[in-house]
Image 1 (cartoon, rainbow, N blue to C red):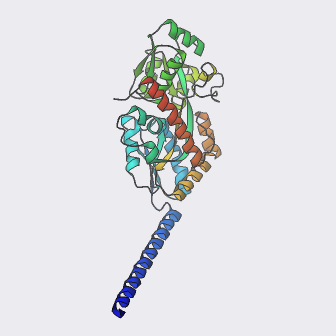
Image 2 (tube, rainbow, N blue to C red):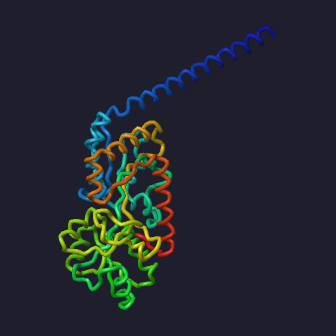
Image 3 (cartoon, rainbow, N blue to C red):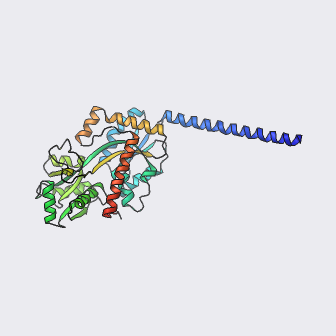
Length: 336
């Protein structure tokens, strides 16, 4: 009996020691994790841009990279990874370690649309990405050739109804925000228009200038120089309200109530990135966006936003995803 009690005591003592060692290890691990967050960043941060240089997302990322690097105390490197309508770069973020050292300047397409238009995008934007900070939100601008036989939304709708199946609208690719905005316009106005997809906005803009197509929903930043130069005329803007840089151009919503299509961009991190890191990035990015020179640059391009918390940005992304899901299910648009 004495030996049995001794064995039980020895076993209990060993278990207590193991538990104490385990608790110490967990405590050390938690402390190390906390120190990592406190020290963040201690090496360069990479920002993936899922499109080629020169696009709106690339402009956003490069405009903020230098001031963000100054605030973080480490280099911020922009890494363009174009392909598959933004899906290639998005997959890389989904596969990256959730440590705050790999971010993505994500836009409407790869975050709110691809999951519904692609059979296998290779990532799940809801499960894989954590919204960090909204950077810019630019209305899509509905433009037409300078020689187009219509100048207003009402005239465009009348022209499309008088010429069913004859009005061609350009897009920078199937399933892009511009494509879906035009499809929504046709659906809500009861008109029949033909989709002409291009490989990028540049080619689409050239064919609008050359009157090879009738209309195109373009990002404001890409089209404003052409509008101001008189090579293209702006018919309307896709946001609910008019654009400050085009105050005389009405919103589509003034003719088609509820119409709201913009091209937004913001920073995203892998979903499990530590909360302290996400909140640090949100604060730094929002502070940068409120500096006078950066804010004026965004205003000039029609992309200025008010700072959003991470929770508010996530709610906005979910709202946008729901809008596009309903539209895609209704129209049946799919990317092969």
